[in-house]
Each structure stands twice: as structure tokens, then as C-alpha cells.
Image 1 (tube, rainbow, N blue to C red):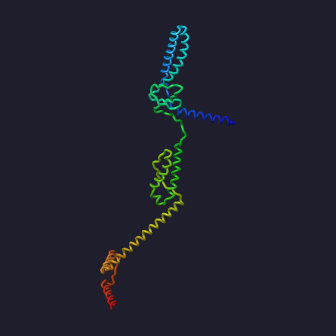
Image 2: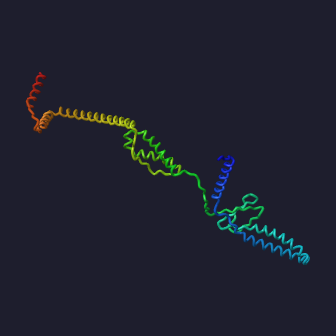
Image 3: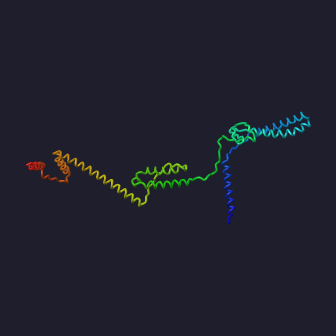
Length: 299
């Protein structure tokens, strides 16, 4: 079925106009000014009109009798009606919760109310302002939905996860999960706070990395562990050498230290039944040989 472009455009404009009118109706306050002085103005109008007509009749009777009253009475009725109508519109009444903003010839003249106030037509204009808390019915608006902000938070969390994980080693990734969670939560919270949403916490349930990355990080971790093992072994060898040097110096300074050490060694070997120790040369013979060597060196 063919469509007429003008008809479609007219339908769209009509729909937009209806939505605008409905929005204005929704935004309009539910309570407006109620004229409380209408009854008072009617009473003033009738009293002044009757009084003016009666006064005109009395003046006519006093001036020319019944013929004079017949002339002044219609004129008095007309004049008194317009005068009474004007005076009745001077009196306005504001409710207890209202204030009247008076503009005289377009300029601010004063604030009146509540109660009876005098507003002179033609010169004065009054605007009644309700000082109570008014309830407005706001029309529906298109806002971000639950699904939208959940998707946005998920995307920000994934992007932040890649940034944070990419700057860490495997050891840091496995040992500093709390720090990773706090970094991701702070980044996502800074974005979500502008939407009126609060992120309480983010938790890492599992770490799943690509195989290539696993192999690379595993080699890096292995190299780090080998480096630490080599450094630890070198420090142990250095400490052992220092202790051996200190022991040798102690034995050198004490003549019987070497003999005691020899006896301790023999005692340690002899504690096991599977070991047999054969001492071919006594210690005294060794001492005698050392003394002879010194004597020859001295001669």
C-alpha cells in the first residue's frame, strides 16, 4: 500500500503536538488559584448598585417630584451599576496559603495577602502565588535502563581488567588479587558514579589466560626463581667460606685444636658398626716428626 509523504509528516507533527500538550498538562500544578472573593464582590456590586439607584431616585424626587425621579432613576441605575462594578473588582481575597504579587503599570508595587486586598483595575495587576508544597506529575522520560548500565559496567570492568593485568607479572597476578580488585573497582566506580550508580565491590573468581601468555609468564617466573636460587646458593657458599676461614684461624691459634678435631672425626666414624678405622701412625709420632723438621730448619 503506497504512503503519502505529506500524510505521514502530518501524523508525526500531530503526535509530537499531542506529546507536548500532554507534557504541559503533566507539568501543570494540580492546585490553582481559587477565587475566594467572588461572593464578596457580588454582594458589594448589588449593595452599591441598589444604593446608587435609590440615591438617584431620591435626588429626582427632591428636584422635580415623580417626573424628575423618572428621569434620574434610569440614569442613576446605569451609572451606579458601572461604579459598583468597578468598586467590586477592587476588592480581592487571597487565601491563607497565597500571596498576591501586585504590579502597578507593569512595575512591582508590593506583596499583599493573605485576606482582603485592594487592587485597582486598569492600573494594577495581581498574580497569586501558592506558598504550599505543590506536587507535580512529571511525564515519563527516556532514561538509561537496568540492562544498559549493567552492560556498560561490564565493558568498563573488562577494559580495566586488561589494563591492570597487562602491567603485572605472573607472581604479582597470583599474589596481589586484592590490589587488582581494588584497582578495577575504583576505575569502574569513577565511571558509574556519573550515572547515579554505586559499585560496592568487584571480585575475581578465576584467572584464565591464553596458552602463549601462560608459557611466556611461566618462563619469566622460572627465570626469576632460578635467579633467586642462584643468589641464595652464592650467599650460602660465602657464609660457609667465612665460617671455615674463622674455624681455620681458631685451630691455627690453638695447638691442641687440631688434635681434638681429629679425635672428634674418629669418634664420629667409629659410632657406626659398618665403619672400620685403622690408625697407622699415632699422634705423638706426628708431633715428633714436626719437632724434628723444625730442628733441621733451625740448623
